[in-house]
Amino acid sequence: MAKEKDFEEMLEDLENIVTSLEKDDLKLDESITKFEEGMKLTKLCNTKLEEAEKKITILLNENGEIKEENFVAE
Image (cartoon, rainbow, N blue to C red):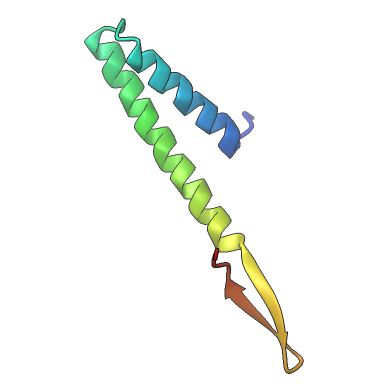
């Protein structure tokens, strides 16, 4: 079974796709295929980022209760 790529690996793949598209030496069909692959990777990266944002929380102890709040960067 193939291991799922982590965020950094997907981002590197996306950067490689962008580089190959910028070279302008691909045929139209190849460019479209690369673009589609890049869009899929972009969606996966966004999903991973959204999952990470949901996991980032601050636990506060108020009146003996643990309160979970979303992380907000100041």
